Length: 149
Image 1 (tube, rainbow, N blue to C red):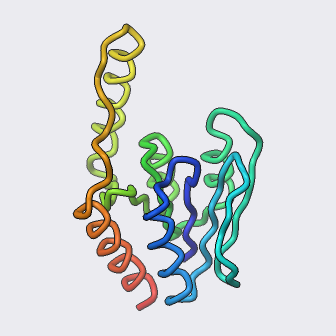
Image 2: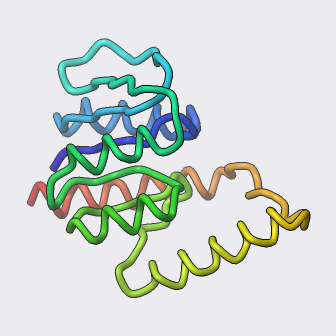
């Protein structure tokens, strides 16, 4: 298992959790972003800068991922593609996207996008909470442990 991060919008606190996990479990962690990122010096942590543009990071992750890889993203279309390619998709809030619910999530996302484009204010997600961080760390540990065992 390798871990890929849709890093442009990934919260810093989640990246820190990932850095610690990659070092502790000796798993390759690659952050993919449209901009240069500062990462810790480690044989297990890498950064890949892609062209600036819509979905460039997502497309690069999909090109490089393999079945069984873990992708960290809040992007529902990317999560759907990861699931279709037999990978795992985990949100920064600790939600493991599921094959059984991803189509409904895509439908809701498209509906909200339509509402926003018509001028409706749908609001954004709430700030990342302590419970979100704990949920992410717990789910990450479960996934890593399952794949390593």
